Length: 105
Image (cartoon, rainbow, N blue to C red):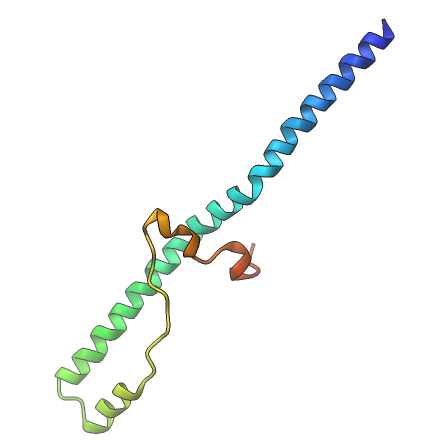
């Protein structure tokens, strides 16, 4: 009788271990998904700021900014940024939690 209980306990433990291993295998995908969800609003905001910046520079140039300012605006380096990818097929090209480095908690 004790042997049957021990065997049943062993089988239950093995099932729990198998279930935990499945969950453990899903963790990296879960963290990546969460990271992308949190990153997307920041990428959207960055793109909006870049558009706003370009619009403001254009307004300054069109509104007759002095020649020195126009020259400096043209000489400003353009940011080297990757476009925001919204196509799920391109999702692998987005920064990942690993490539982005440590995050704040």
